[in-house]
Length: 351
Image 1 (cartoon, rainbow, N blue to C red):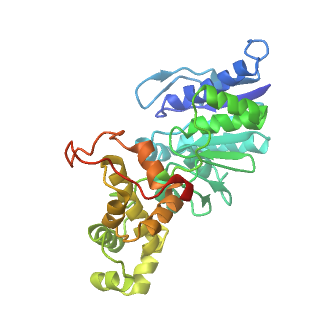
Image 2: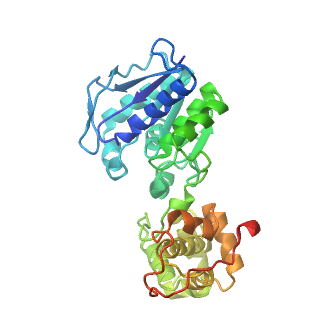
Image 3: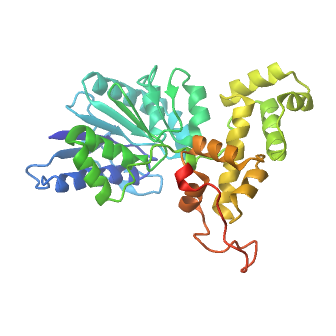
């Protein structure tokens, strides 16, 4: 029997508690061990003081008891502060210290420690992620990297795992995390059946296709912010670092250094990601063809654009449009009812 302790606190999303429990409960039933006397997994929901907690939505979440750092556990799942409230949670040093001490003791005792979304901050605050790989909500990646430079952040990944520590990406990665726990403690076959039964896409490996860079500079460097705005304004024009530096009245070396410090990537890589981000918006909201999407974001060669798009998102432009388009096969509303449907030059076999 695998004991899973789910640690909760005020300000979490209620689904982060119920979602993993539903996955574990389904695994019990599908394994033929749904009887209360013989479950494959058992779980307890626990808080620091043993009292119910209030979710970000205002919903009260009942708990089974108080967090006991010395209690026997196979897994500890740390629920995540709501993204918008994360900074306020981090400021509560008393809660952080208590959670950190409990997490360290559990991990040293052999428990697998798992967190998703901004819950990775709590693991990092405890020092559990120092020198280890981790992921977090894509929207908080730049902030996370600045706060915890010793962590090997892989912000594009849905799940990371090292030394008995699992991290999930953005909010609903708690489902991927729970399926991984089923696989780890009950086998790949049961994990696969559970995921299929609950319609969980166990094949997604990257959150890059969901990420957004626009208007989220995430730093306090005014020079780099000016550079980013210039890139946004001149998106479809050829990029030359020397011209951008001259426009900002700094040297190329200074601009590159400041950019790397603020954004954790060189200017050209940022521009590529920005162009792909704008392309994603066009694919989501218009029916224009790939060639025009490519030109609007600064690529005259659609083949080059396709390769870059897939490398950064894990999907081809066509796959991305099929998954995320708000039009869902409707005619392009900006082009009139008689407009032809969008055509593609990136057939699946090529990419």
